[in-house]
Image (cartoon, rainbow, N blue to C red; front, side):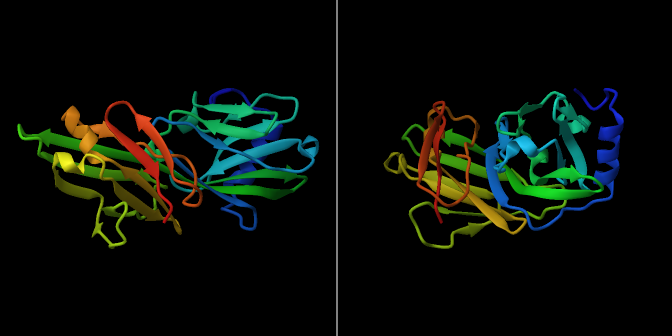
Length: 249
């Protein structure tokens, strides 16, 4: 149900509760990392799920904390923010909220609470990074390729992003800033570069192989493997453009 649909007294009470409540502390935390256009699932690992009768999701991605969606047992999910209208689904079996077709504006803090009488129980908090890495390439006749890499990420309207680039296999600090200019040769075809974005007390990284964009000479969107910095290196191919890897720092 969209935000413009009629809502009952229960939902109205939750809205009043959400309007006067900031980001609570003390719940489990999860970092989510996705790219523009993907879907993010806000999972909820709760014991005795059958005892949960209602859930309220909130976000500060676009400013002050606002209600995103509410669910009451025996009823369908109600989307309360027009910013998410038509993009939200609910998996009742796992009590997970899913936001589809992500934009950078969706990045930021989220939480989910259960309303208990006149109080609320914080169940989980999330920090969502939404990445968009683009490469512009110009190739010469001898195979030399001039590239401009631009790393962008959304993590909330008021967040201050800091970016850095470095060769993936190098321990050098690399360069600061979202843009990186390179001149590569055919021998550099497998060389990867890592962009790290830091904000909200968290940082996430994405590694790309820029020379693969030289085959088309056009801009290409970066791909970010979902998850935190911990864990094995993952590989995913996005069309013919380039290979993206999640890098463990």
